[in-house]
Length: 120
Image 1 (cartoon, helix red, strand yellow):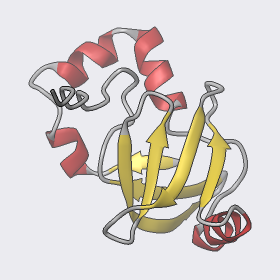
Image 2 (cartoon, one colour):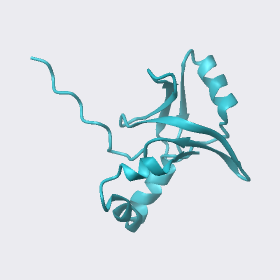
Image 3 (cartoon, helix red, strand yellow):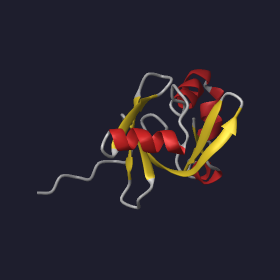
Image 4 (cartoon, helix red, strand yellow):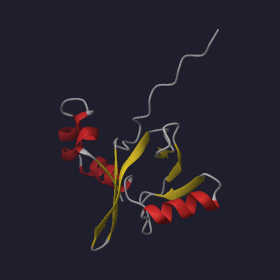
């Protein structure tokens, strides 16, 4: 699981989290976009990145690909199919039913940064 930290939630516009929590379907989709099948601690992630020559793809519980790569700042970066990115800021919080890795952004479907306008 990749869990957003408090700073990530503070980046949401006012009322966004409340509106998500009131919509069970959207909230479930949001949660599933942060969970992947399997157990991935730091060592497992490094192994997957090494095998993939710096890239790896996991599948979220809602069936979407989650691309793993190394960011320009040399941190593990997650990228959703929509282009939303987050960096892992904390690894290996062990729970009874999985491993939690902390991220600095919310993987909110449809929340990718706007594309730069084409150069003329």
